[in-house]
Length: 412
Figure 1 (spheres, one colour):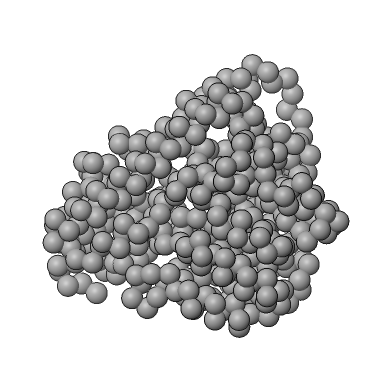
Figure 2 (cartoon, rainbow, N blue to C red):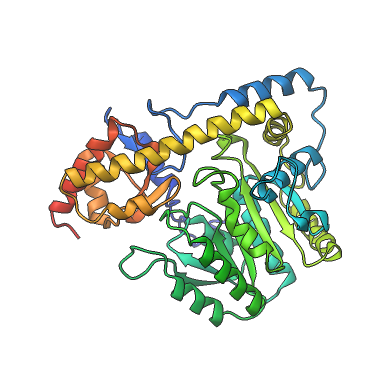
């Protein structure tokens, strides 16, 4: 083979740490298999249904559709306005009322292909405008954070998100990392429902983090993929408001995959908050130039669904009720699993009750995870990340007994 070919002296890239597990699950022929690895909401029958509000929005869109023209580089205004209202509404505000930063012209948004596209755009923006900046990521985290930073050719720094015993948020460790970073470095934060731990800072801790970020001249990138699935739509943006209160420039990656169940539509947005309106305009111009070389224009259909729902009071109310039902079912699964693990004799899992959102870590070793997969057909992600939204009342005792068995086996 010629040395000029693409494949010369190349080895295969590693399997994706999440989708690789999902692929193994799909290939498993056992009828009792359980997919608790993928980050998707499932109902009690194990399906990921299309909510009624989504179906109605799509019906309206289809009836009114007359063209398949390109969207602007930043996306359609109706979608961007809808996401702005969703992200920047404050406690007690009616729909449409937003944070003063919006009225000051400090906030602009771009429609992206999913939250992943928003995160990549955010890191690329840092790489372009702050040459030499490093991006700090807490461990553990969503594995794709590492790959996104690497793909953007930015130096990655790591810090511990959890204390040594993996039981709580390591506030002192994060503050030490903030102090060690140089001005212009960026920190990726999970806005709510930390993936994979479910462990978020308190409101007071977020305020302290935001103040230290501002003092150190750092750039926060807030990954908000689970708004509405933790404590509610407005409560879940408390971290965002903590940073806004300091006046610091920030980037917010938003996703409609989970809270709208629009997984395969790839609907996301990047919100850019500048120090001034003029600064925001400059940042947005660079973001648009980056977008032009990647996806150029965003896909329209999923964004139109979100805009249709949030732009109609009846549909928005219906969607909020559907989302709240999802949130409460996830919370119930968390409580049921904790009780079932205790009943099965597995110790040390009361901490699961402190988590928010879809995920928690069971703290299992690779050997224990392999036993769950091979002996019980239960698929989890590294360290035993379990998707609470994939459980059902029928699955909970089965999972608890299996976890207790592999723990009792003494495998390490």
